[in-house]
Length: 117
Image (cartoon, rainbow, N blue to C red):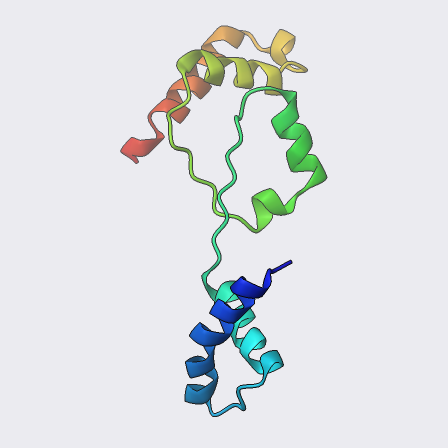
């Protein structure tokens, strides 16, 4: 995975870490210290579009994307998208509601104004 030049850089930079921890600076210990620092400081950014079936499929295939991650929405959803999602989610009971459009408008307004609360 690493070329020789990379390993030399790793050994040079992590040798003082091993010495500071009181561990013998063997290649295995130095590389272990390096991996510890990588695990401590690694950050991964995934960007998905919330539009369409592909996003829902990914979330079903990999539930840890929701359970083990911090989700940041960088842009507000357009009003039309909120209305479409609400319509899709309650499509089974939509015909039974006396004022279906009013409910969908309410759902959209609630999500658009959530930042106020």
